[in-house]
Length: 341
Image (cartoon, rainbow, N blue to C red):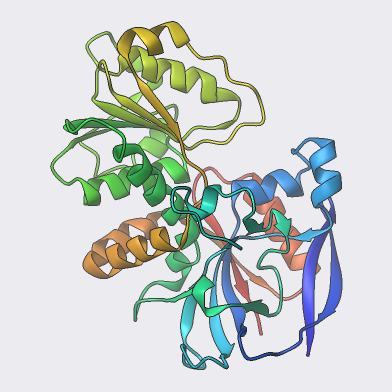
């Protein structure tokens, strides 16, 4: 059968490509219905990756946050018409120590292989999970981003010391919001602080115990552990501020992505005996953890509705481009693409 793929040919220019899908007994087909634009997609769209990387990655279909409807499953593991979330990480091997999202052999949709901006997605059942009944589908569309925050928290506290009483999140954007929200539900008894630079954005963090502007922090502000959700050019400033305020032997989790080298105060990392751990992407187990939280705590998805931003019905390349352009100028919130059949 013929599949329509919407690829980014070069920054700000999409093209339509038709590819043949060979149906077999081990692969299923999912029709994307709700897709969410990520900052990684924007870096490709705006040409903000290094030129040598763009040359090797493009042309490529974008989007790695999406849900869809099952239209074909020869393995009978899913019902036709069932709503599912698709996992973009595509491991080709297993390792007893290294997680699937850190294996150099793993592929990732919208980063080297085509993402979910396609009419149909051919995948194996292991890369798909059923959505809870009645879930807000717009929230569900960015479950992948929630799974990234979930993985980072689990990754960070797997190596931290056991005193988890006060935790701070640096970053008042979507990732900071999601990470802080998950911390509230995974560790309900902690004192949760959020540090940011926009007072308006910080007003969304109603579930945090306290929020602070970066300029408000004094020498008395301290925490056991901290997670960085800033990224970009400001990542270095944020991490060094975390190093200044974290207590000895605390753990700093890094989530924000930056293309630039970030100078860090290694003297104080050594003096305080800090652990600094990086986290990237997520795997099937992280998606399962998030879906379990969705089911146990329906109010969590209600909080996530606060960051559902503009919604765009998508029928063609012009609609896709308009959505990406509008997403550049948003203050906060996830831009959702509603795939029109």
